[in-house]
Image (cartoon, rainbow, N blue to C red; front, side):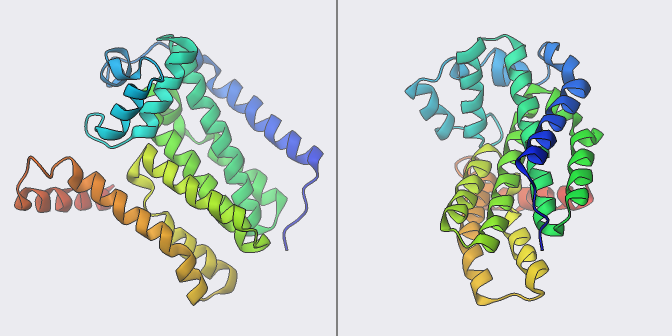
Length: 255
């Protein structure tokens, strides 16, 4: 049973998260760009200078330079339209995305635990945890904070759909997962979490839970292929591709 949350409590929670993060990360808004990836991705990148059809097509048809992150590139294009190459708007976007993610963490924790106190503590811990500093304060880490936001939105929407049985929440969950993959493919493990959330609710895997997660698995397979093989396909042999996959697997397990 999920404890009910009044509109006043919800507003206070959101305002509290925003104020807390403004205090913690406020100074980062006035930082300059960092000359480590920022020049390649933003300062010297002509394809982020405006939200034009040509720039959008380029974002979705190329890598930047090693990852397929078209939606992240489009977010830089939006920032350029709003503020040119002034770093403030880029840092503000990262901070707002982190604030949104912190709020979503509270929402997910509430739906999983049913307790407002647990949701509040979990959201606060996520908001202030130092592991998030790099993704918030470094503009070139936009891909992480953006994909993380959509990852959490997808998971929260899926949990809401499971309890409310409103198809619109399922559509939002699937669309959010797609947007997250377009931001950075590292969130492709989400379908396994969806299965675990079903197990958490009923302590068993059902045919319905497997079928509902199938579209998410298909998206993961497609984007996993694009991420690992897409850029290497025309320039590397099958043996090199195999070695790259092994190296990435070992690297991920080690970390």
